[in-house]
Length: 304
Image 1 (cartoon, rainbow, N blue to C red):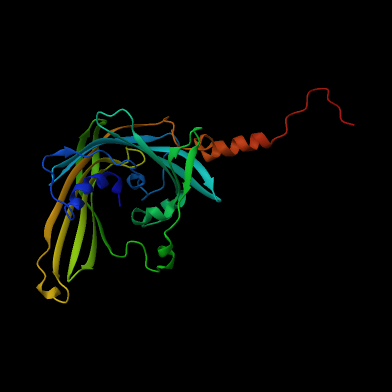
Image 2 (cartoon, one colour):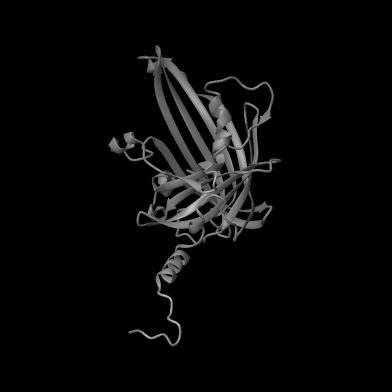
């Protein structure tokens, strides 16, 4: 699921399950750590290279008066061969409107994600490492991604309780700051439900995301020119053992938002990925081979 954009907008709606509405509207800052691996298009072979980037302006609001207004940049920050597997680094930079310093996180993704037909649902399985901070000497603090112990015992596939639907719904022309694009419209719906018992009652909560994506291959990395987002949270409760008497699901949270393409380009350098990986694997291999080649002997040198 392309959660990078929608996560911020969900915060207010999910808060409706546990808290009251705020007294006045407020702008919610972008998350301290926001990962945009979900924005990358894994449905076809990649065509990006190290240094390519794309940025979006994200705005949104919910029914509790919360708002969002920030810029997110997705950068292909480097490549690395990790445990014998070819991987690429994705760096996400998030910046609130009016703030100077962005927050950032870099994630190492396996290139094998492009071979998975269900990559959008299972992208987390292809995460290998992450960097979200640096030490005092400037070296990145790398964390290896490990699966939670319980998932190693669970034989059920990821997303088993998730409803997922993708449809092509037509074509349209979209105008964004970068320019005008003829796009294919794709509607993506994902629903997640959970039931729990508390005291003498049970409750069921259903969260549904509906996103309309303006898709064009002229935009690198993500192929998204614009994305409209709607998230709903519905809930119902009943006395334990009396599910037949349960009320209908009622809406307890609504969020809407939009991400519009700002710009894209190449040549941007990472601020988090280790320096030696901020270039292609081909360049790294060439440098390693050159370093292993003996230096030529000076002219006139004789061996005994």
